[in-house]
Image (cartoon, rainbow, N blue to C red; front, side):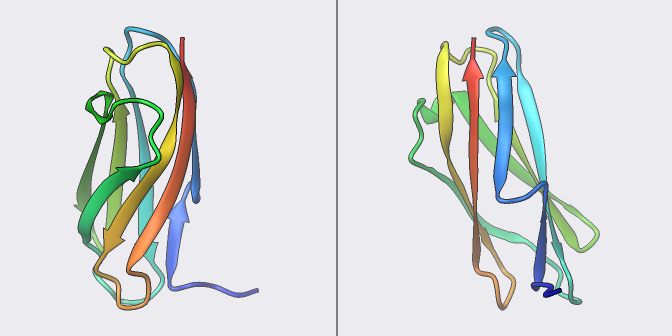
Length: 107
């Protein structure tokens, strides 16, 4: 059993599932260090998005030594497939950035 310096919950892939058109969806991703490092985000950006970035927002907040990143899909998002990569830059000495793939379907 090998344990890395950083634990990501729910993992490197975030399933958004079915998003009802006209409703807002929010999902959280927790980054928790396995050492004494106090995590903070340095940057957050989207890559390979199938939908305009104006319909998807991302925010972060501290929770002790963890960082919680919240991905939100707007209620104005058009119908169709939503997928992409969220690249989160971290101040951790060993893990500088983490890529979270996500997908869902607005219907």
